[in-house]
Amino acid sequence: MVDAAKKAHFSAERPCSVHQNILNKYRLASYARAVGFPVTNVDSAPSGRGHGNALDTNTKDLIQDFFERDDNSRLTSGKKQTATKNKIKKQKRLLHDTVVNMHEKFCAENPTNCISYAAFARLRPFWVRLPTSKDRDTCMCKRHANVQLMADKLFQLGVVDFKNCEDALQQMQICCDENDKVCMMRESSVCQDKHISFKESAARDDSFVVWSEWTTSTHEYQKDGQTKSTKLTSTSMKHGSVKEPITSA
Image 1 (spheres, one colour):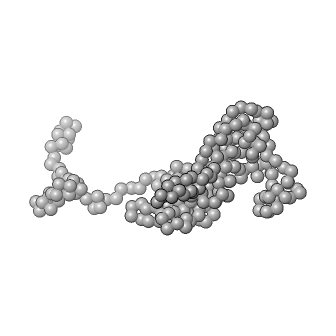
Image 2 (cartoon, rainbow, N blue to C red; image 1 turned 90 degrees about the vertical axis):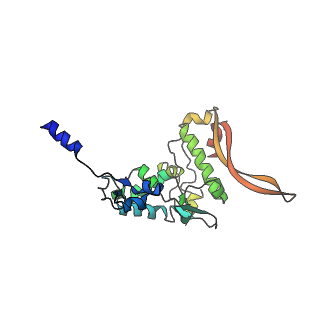
């Protein structure tokens, strides 16, 4: 009985079909319709069941609105600072922080819509970018970046327990009030003598280390037979003992 069922199953005539894209490729779509040949069309196919882990529209909208908030990114002012994808042109926005920190902030603000870091990074709008060296048009951005680069190196060496500079203000209570200008400028009598706690042996460590630093240099070039100069901001490698970045910090 089983053999008879298999034989009937495989011997039954089934209408074969060809996808419309293949027929269009060889310019046979009109001929196929004329002779009544079955054509498969993706648009006419029944829609299947969505993926069980698919994100809802509300979460996607929350992520896009989160990235476009002024406290998370800033809008560029240049006419040519745009990004285009699938014929959609948008003005670029530059993030104020890393995507990792943005993910932590999003999950803290939206605990019911918290998703994985991979999904969060994938849903970042294409016009929201991380700032590069050419986007650093103010010296303040460069100074803040240099402090963070030194903090990254000291954390890698195990000299400090914090990875982000903002964490030092909270964990070590260096400033009594982050929103007070007097306190942040180290002019407060309450906390002006507080300092970052380093590993005890680091102050005596003469080991050779290398770290990165943003520097601005003058670059000369020739144009129309004249020598002109411009300032370029780029990363350079600094080297010295462990004591040097500690003194700079």
